Structures are given as structure tokens and as C-alpha cells.
Image (cartoon, rainbow, N blue to C red; front, side, top):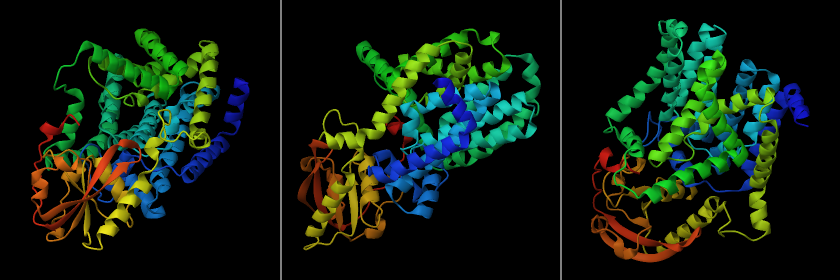
Length: 508
């Protein structure tokens, strides 16, 4: 059966990718799931295009802006780039595997990647991951062409792809670093540093320059934020450290499926140990994936990490697994892994219907709660503000709390107005503190939505208004224990100057 599937894929690859694109695009438009906080946050970035932002390079904002300019500001359109990029990713993933092994291995690799929930998520949620994954895979494809086909132009294409990956996420710098490692392991490759590697490096440097200049003008805030992921400000107990480590490992099992995740980790250990016994092509794949997987696992034992960080590292590990499968290794285990994976994928697609059918909304086993109720909640706040407008008409909206509160209100409020965020701790904790405040509304009235209890509202906030009063409360539909407090702030007198200090905010 598996052989028949690979033969069909190889014969009808274009049809397979087209059907996948159609199914995934249709799901975007019919699922009716709201944007999560990150998606709304990046959408808000897209309304003020720049060369960089508080925590990430600009690619995600650029792509969302391109698609919303063409299709409008709806949740499905915001997410549509993820499906387009995901389809391009699959094409390059298949082509890379076929170039290094053969068509059968390429089809097996495609079946494996499609069986992982990580790939499904990257084709539904529009964050920095879809562009990173796509351009990361394009980099691998063109690098293998440059290295093993002697194609000089591919060095330039690889550099452009890695530059685009860098504009998606800072972690893409690992690609040239791993390439250097690969080149240094054999003296016969040293000559590539004289010309070919420089051709590859030039587009990457050109993409880095605007990011560096932007950060220089913004107190290096993005680098301060990134640094915070690798600096532990307080010691934690061994028990908590072990708990964090196992949580991230569990995340790998869920994103890759248990069997496939274990196989990829085993292969990463096995092939890294025998690195110099492998062919040049397989050595390249090991440097571009398994070495990084092992590095991540080691880092995870030392400090807190995020479960999605190593996902690009598994791409070449999957390609290597497909090559091992062809030699007769792991075939039985991989069959079980594929079955489990496709069951998980099917259940994931069916979740909204199953949750609705069995009335499991907002229960402990409802993983879709993050995608629900945001629009309805915003609508209820709008109704409250309109009721208050009988006495005092609000001129703008202001939030006190997490950046997600601000961005989701901006997206789901009628006509998508700019929503402002008051940072009660002072300093810069999000992109909103880098943008100008509502200074054009001096003397005007704000409708304030706060995650803080009314008694906890800072005096600094109430003092910037002539009159500040509570007008109601609203319950978070995704967390019944969380209550938002609603205020009217009349006569805005001033807006506090931001205290741009990346060092104090690096832990966010």
C-alpha cells in the first residue's frame, strides 16, 4: 500500500499538491475560527510596514499586508499566505529529497511530513513559522544544487532564500553557520570559501543591513528581546527544570507524532555519530538538521526553550529517514508512525465539528478554545461602549493588559481602528510601545478595556485623563474566571513618553 502511494505521488505530484492546496484553503474559509493573539498582533504590524519590529524581522507583516491588500481584512485572508507558502515548501521539500536520493524516497518523505501536525498547523496559523519553513527549505534545495551539481547561480538563489528566511526569523542565521561547519569538515571544500560562499553570503548581508539599522535606531530592542530567551534571571529548582524539559519533549511528540518524533531523534544521534562515514550529500543533510536537533535537545536540558524552535531542523532529518527507509531500515516503525500521524491529522481537521457535535466547547479537552469567541467578545464590548455613548461618545479605544488584547480588538472592531495600549509596568514590552500614542486625541474621550481589577488601575493612567470612571465589566469567554474592567476616560491630557529599555524587557 505504501509503495502504491509513492507511485501515485510521483506520477501525479502536481495534482496532489493542488488538491492539498484546495483542501487547506477551503478549510480556512469554512472553519470560522477566529485569529489567535499572535496572528492579530502580526496583522497589526502589517498596517504599519517597517524593516523590523519589536521581536521579529518584517517578513510576516509584509506577507499579511500583501494578501490583505488583495483580499481584505478577514481571518481567512490573513491566514492564506500560510497555505501558499506551505505548498511551495512541499514542492521544494520533494525536489530536495529527489535530488539527493530518488523519486521514491521523495514520495516517502512527503508522506512523512504530511503526517505531522506541525505541517498542518504551519498551513493554518499565520505566524513567522510558515515563511521561515518555506525559505529554509528553499535554501536547502539551492545549496544542495550549488554543492553537488556545481551550479554557480544556485549559490545566489540560496543566498536570496536564506536572506528571505532571515527576514522571517533571526534563527535563519543557523543556515550559513551550519554550511560553514559542513565546508570545514573536508579540506577539499575549502576552495568554496574563495568565491562561491561569498556569492551566497552577499544577499544575506544585504538583508541584515536594514534590520541592524532599524535596531540601532530603536535601542536594539529586537536583540534585547531575543537575548531574553537565553538569559535566566532567576534560578529554578531541579524539579521545575526537569518538568520544563519534559514539557518541550512532549511538545515534539505532539507536533511530529510520537513514533516519527522518536525515529527522527534516534536518526539524529545515529547519523551525527557516524557523520564522516556518510556520503557528502548525507553529511550536508546532517549538518542542516540532525546536528541542530541534538543541539536543541542539549539546550533544552540547560534552560527553558520553546517547543516549536527545532521544527526546521527536522526537515533534513525526515529526508534522511526516507533514505534509510529505502535501505530496509525502520520500515515497520514508519508504517505505524504514518498511521498514527494521519489519524491525528484527520482528528485535527474534524475537531471543530466534533467539539460542536458533542458540546465540548470551552471544556478542558477543547483545544480550539483559543480560536473561539474573540469576535463575539469584541462585539459585546462595542455594544457596551455604544451604550455609554449616550452620555459620552468615546473617540478611541485604549487597552491595559497583554498585547493580544490590543491586537485582537484592533482586528475585530468595526472598520479596524487603531487601538492603543497602555503599558502599566513602564518600558517597552511590545511593538505598541514603539509606536506613537494617541497624542492626536488630546482632550478627547477613551473607552478603556483593562485586564486589571478596577482597584489595580495605576494612578499614572487615571492622571492622564480629566475624569476616569468605571462603567462596567466583561467576562473573558475563554476563561470564565477572568474579568475585564471597562472605563471611560474623559479629556485626555497627555500621553506618557515611552521608556525604551530593551534590557529590562528581555524576558518576555
